[in-house]
Image 1 (cartoon, rainbow, N blue to C red):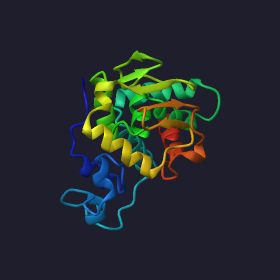
Image 2 (tube, rainbow, N blue to C red):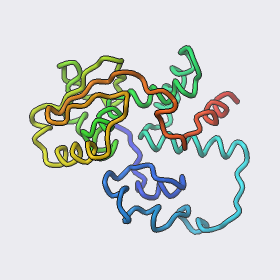
Image 3 (tube, rainbow, N blue to C red):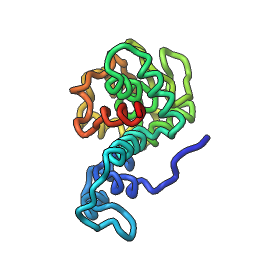
Length: 209
């Protein structure tokens, strides 16, 4: 299975903001953005660099891809599906990415990061409507119930991730029972419930060229 092996902190620095790729470390002063808020590499500290319109669109697409841990080919498929659906393509795109099983598992606190939640899914640690599903890209529908297996719920890292997520609070579109290690995907998130830093319109413009 192909995956992005670039250092996670380097990816955050390249995009100039926290992508929360390293779990709890991102909430501490050890976060690389807190210590070095400039791009990585020899010329990272150069100031006054201006991106062209295309450069801004490409940068935004890369940021969203990295945030959700999706490779280019997968991202194009998700965008194609978003453009086929009714409504605004950009909002559809974010909703489809948020409804992926690995993303929902992360939002429910089954992992401290999307990568960790994806690993829990791949290792047969998650049930969807009572059936084992180990495909991270599996798209959930409103009303689907996602639950940890007994073996996964007993893991210390999963317990710690659940406690940390509970302390921060869960999104409105999810209903989570921390003690039972299960939750319900109530609805697709509306645009105002998603990060305001995402500029999905630039991605739509990029693929409309």
